[in-house]
Picture (cartoon, rainbow, N blue to C red):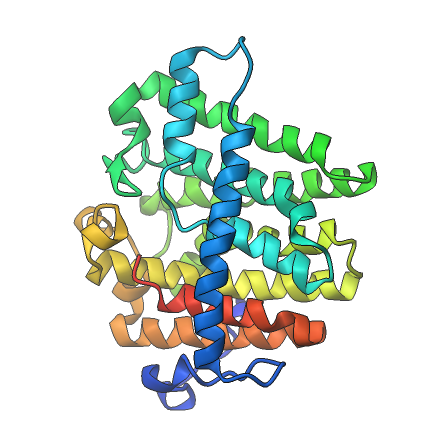
Amino acid sequence: MYNEVFGLRPSSSSLPSPSTMAHSTMPLSGRPAADRSTELARQIGELRQEIDAALEGHTQFGEGCPRRLREAIRYSLLAPGKRLRPILVLLAAEACGLDRGRAMPAACAVEMVHAYSLIHDDLPAMDDDDLRRGRETCHRVFGEDVAILVGDALLARAFELLATEIMPAEVAVNCCRALAQAAGACQLVGGQADDLDPENQPETLEALTQIHLRKTAAMICVCARLGGIVAQAGEHQIAALASYGQKLGLAFQIVDDLLDAQGNEQQMGKRAKKDADRGKLTFPRLLGIEESRQRARQFVREAQAEIAVLGSGASSLIALADYMVERDR
């Protein structure tokens, strides 16, 4: 897997410069990248509103859910966020010819799994963070016990949505399988376990990449795959989406590391420089700032190339990749 992702170490001279990268990839429809970026910003705003409305509806719960638990679930899940993972599900489904509304349950499911992972990641026993999405973390407001239960409830609700709202049943099964694998012991949870155990991890690019292929890239990869699965796309299309998602996931993590090292805490809505304070191995620490930026842009370019098979439907996914690597939070 490492060789497939990194291969030979690219030289800086072989990569596009930061000033040209954002505009270097022409969409398959032939529109300039600047126009594509403007259109994507508008589209992302609309998609966030649709996703937030769906999440609101899916977290009403019945009488059996205690009031404080319900409040804590909604406090964490409905907090203002980028919603990039559910947006990726919706755009991938559209790229495969499906109306995005039919992919919304899958989009909400991945956002619930993502929110659960953040809540647990913020706990004192893990990364011990007190700020998330511009507000106090769940355990700081509601207590550690409630925060753990919120994560449990969101994880269960995610699979309930897939099982009950994705049709036909065979597609629902495939969605449940894909998301469970991505969120499980060999992927998201396994990557988090290794990330929390730095003393037993070699400080090498290969080890760091293996952690983030699981901790970060696996969930971004499954978002792209879920869009294709719900759309009942062909194996070749889903494989292309998976490759796109994996490379985009690594780019996303590198940008996260860069933001932690250099970002604005108020813009990000979470504490900056926490990785350096804890001595964690990151891409900037291992490669340096400029080489890390180059790597992220290279991964984006490779991700965009992976979805050429989707034809003109890939335009929004190409723009989303640029957006994700140029973000400031």
